[in-house]
Length: 394
Image (cartoon, rainbow, N blue to C red):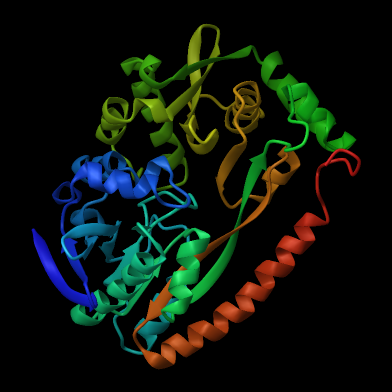
């Protein structure tokens, strides 16, 4: 069902839809392809699978409020948005803000969230034909929040053009950091050995020791891509995925049906590493890939046996080896984890945007973000001073 938010500005009208299927897939994906930083996670198929698999639906705290922006009769912008009754599955943490609201007798939830559920991958969120439409999406979300009496609006892991549009509309920016590997630009690494040779001796020695421990344990790897991933392999991966979440004391966010839908609608964007010992699978690591952009994203992993250093091999060394061999230029290792630097992944800034309706809380959050941002900047500068790369091989 569509609801009309009304005019955002002259010639711009915003609609809200409570199901991603109400927005036409071709139009959505066309806007995505025209965006500055497209990723597979914003494809209509991915978002529809999250909903139809029962992973991101109202009963799990994700009530769709998908946005469609029209200039006249033409679709010029769109964005995934949700009414959230909690802050789980976001990876930009605002629990303290919610607690402060509660201590003052105010409701922080529901809030409006523009993000991909459970997916802390930087990239375009406000899919728009141009900067003006992008800014209208930012303005329209504030208008929607005001109409519904919501406490706040949050847009996570934005690209640079979206952060600029949000700032022009009076949103507050919050900065974070992730760790990504980038192929060397001038003389690309021709092999994993050449990449390792670019690291400082102690880092290289540690990686070689960790890899040797996995080999000495009798572990080998199979790699399957796209439609070559069998149903049995998907099932084993999902079993491993659930074990990881159970080990951390919580249920998994994504259902097995979600991954079945990915195998059917987006097979070209998945790469699976399966570790075997004595002929039996013992671990799995799943990457998302985009061959057109030559980018890979580390997503999920799990193991049925505890094997020393297997996590590092399955989640970093095997993917890096594959990326180099296949001409990929970037591997994003996921949220948090400065331990990734020792494996050659370097700090990369991320940004989210936030608008709070309550003026006093908005000022308090603005002050907090200024202090937090200075700390993040100092943290990144300190990390850069401890690069794992040899100074003569950067």
